[in-house]
Length: 267
Image: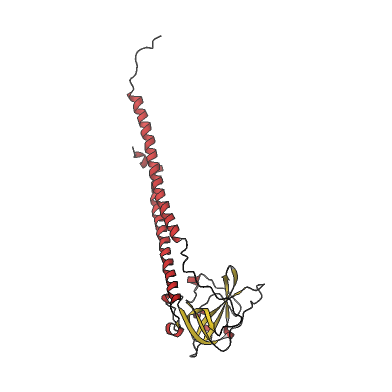
C-alpha cells in the first residue's frame, strides 16, 4: 500500500521534510537562547542599577576592558571636566530624534580620566553646522552615572568614517587614548546626576528598559510550530494518498470478482 513512497516524487518530498524540520527546530532553539540572553541581560540591568553607587576608581582601571558584570553598575567620580577635549558621538537618537552624545573627559585628582557621556543634543539645522552644546560646569564636580563598555565596531556595528576634529563614531577610551593627554579608564559613564548641576545641560540618557524581552520567545515557538505542522502535513498527504490507492484497489477487486454472465439476453 505504501510502495508509492519509493517513487521519485515522494522521495523528494520526504527529503525536503527531513532537511527543513531540523533547520526549523534549530532556528527555534536559536531564538530561545536569544530570549534567555535577554532575560539575563535585563536581570543584570535591574541588579546593577539598584545597587548603591561605588567610587569609579574602585572598579575601573586604565587600559582594562570593563568586566561584563559591571555593565550598568552605578559609580561616582569627582574631578574637573576637560572641555578642551570634549567630543560629540554621531548618529545617536533619543525619542526618535537624531542627534549627538556629548562626551567629556573628567580628570580625577590623580590625573587619570574617565569619559563621561553628559547626555544628548539634537542635530543642527544643516549638516555643516555644529549643534548647540551646553557647556560643562567649571571647577570640581562629582558625577554619578551608569558604567558602559567601550564601543567597538564588532559589538556595536558602528562603522568608521572620516570625521572632522571633535566628532567620533564610537565612544571608546581605547580608541581615543591616543588623542587625549591623560591615562583613560576602560569603559565610560552615562551621566545620571551631577553636583553641582549646570543650569543648562544636555538631555540625560533615559534609564534602560529592563522589562522588554523582545519577540524572541514568540519566534522560537513559531519555528517549532512550523516544524510540527510540516511533519503533520506530510503525514496527512501520505495517508490521503494511501486512502486513494486503497479505494482504487477496492474498486478493481470488485470488478475482477464480479461473475460474468454467459446467457443471452432475453427479448
